[in-house]
Image 1 (cartoon, rainbow, N blue to C red):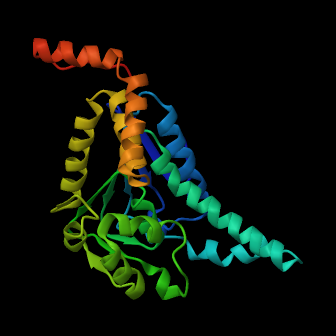
Image 2 (cartoon, rainbow, N blue to C red; image 1 turned 45 degrees about the horizontal axis):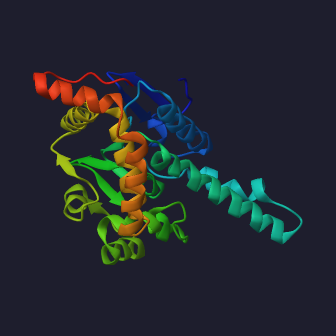
Length: 270
């Protein structure tokens, strides 16, 4: 697919999406917000794409939301009725939320490889991913508090579930920078790699392992984990019973068992 603010490739069942505004520190302008949603819809709908990696071009992963876009919101929502102006702003915020939720909604696992800075809206974005990885030079900031606003696109809702309530509050209240190693210790990122090159190689190796598994089973596993996060254990158990009643008896199951018996690598349909 062709995009203005992203570059997208698909190779060996791995879709790689790169934030591609390096001259603007990959700041997330209106076009990028629209294209992120389109790109993850494409990943979801493309059978050959079994897993996705999100990374950034240039020196930084992302500087967060483009401040020029923020300053232009007033003209976009202006109405002679104050109530309608406020309704317009609410709809803009909900639309931005939906853009990032498209990563979570995507049936394929989404991995994020973070280098340099991950600021503001970047935190909102990475918390939507299945797994996060960083290079040693990466640092993170919930920057909204320093520009006089409350983060509103997912950080305050998803981050506490990842790192715990207390640490999420500290980082959101102070807006301080925290390092890749600290992010690993609080379980925001799974691993820290020594360099950007090692980060990309390591994440791609994990992605290749995932891509070799049954695509139907991987999609079901993502569905179950995400569902369990937002529901009771009893709800989750009931859902997986229904899911497997529908999906278990697949060709993937037979292929996996046959491959195991003959000690060969399984070959799964996309």
